[in-house]
Image 1: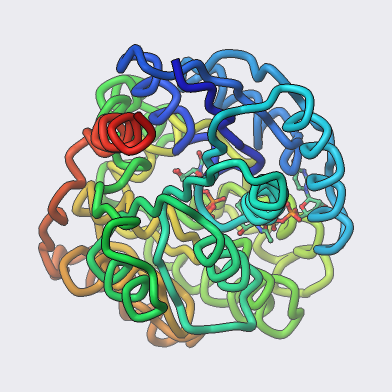
Image 2: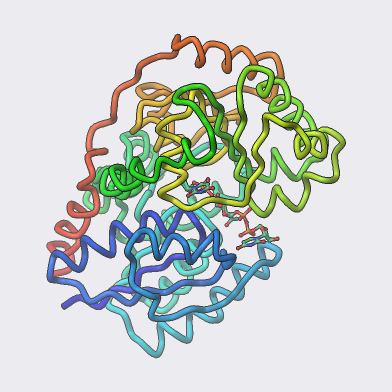
Length: 365
Ligand code: UD1
Ligand code: UDP
């Protein structure tokens, strides 16, 4: 058995680790040590995912919580180093691009523990994003690089990684989506909220560039007020954004608008259901760009770039600037059904985690 430390810290990590944890157990070759860093800790940002995704209770909870980038990264490193020294895993697996990812990766590398990065190679080429720094650093010190889309392989080869350390394995986030889409559909969450099929807009926003700048957040809120003239708007608010919405007049108006449902972050199953039935998803999320492509649902990503270009080239995602009129036009065209149809990328088939488990077992044996 290969003793494997699986690291999860933030909401998108849980969805990816759920798929990997299950595949590793099913392969019969891995003994998992599930470590939750505590980067996300609210019940609606953490516990609900473990419950809905059928994950085991973490073996270790580090409880690092929030803080500046340095504080959060350092706290994860200090706590996880003790666990690695004590538990001596044969291999450490990190996913995605959050602070917990890079912190666990650096710690494993310095203890000479083989390091696996799932969702390797993605690049926005925008170094003002904390995630881009986390991706570059994590990839640069990883031994095994599992990639979700072809652009990732190209970037890793260009950065000098050997072809033998890279596998285009597919998308583990879509493994969870395929596994749970039926259960998610059964929640009928849109009906519980009084929403008609393909008639409403589903919103998420949490990137610092969009929500930490009051002018941008205000413009975003104004775009949502305009979209609300076309149809109901559902906006489950990330805690980073919730903390700032009251600071702007348009944000306060959003809270009072009769066609806008502002809610706390919602569970994975209910959120999937809302995506399946929305006319358009408006987001700055990484994972949601992929999920909307897998579901073939219209999506606009309010960012100047994306590290997931396949969702634009092949999928149903479009990048838009923070421009009220362009966002409104996208809302109209999605409601009219005039959206590109898209197709599902290769290897986004619900089996990426199985491929990773099989390949990693071969590589480590
Ligand atoms: C983090 C990731 C981001 C990812 C996002 C997914 C980094 C640098 N950022 O951003 O890449 O897309 O998670 O959602 O790792 N807070 C709560 N409760 C919680 C968690 C956070 O109230 O359970 C609040 C705190 O005020 C905290 C703020 O949200 O300061 C931001 O949390 P943090 O984990 O630092 O970054 P995210 O914006 O969540
Ligand atoms: N998600 C959720 N509830 C919400 C908002 C998002 O379950 O209220 C899920 C979403 O389906 C996706 C994941 O959270 O699987 C994406 O996380 P997030 O946008 O926070 O992070 P990112 O992918 O941008 O790093």
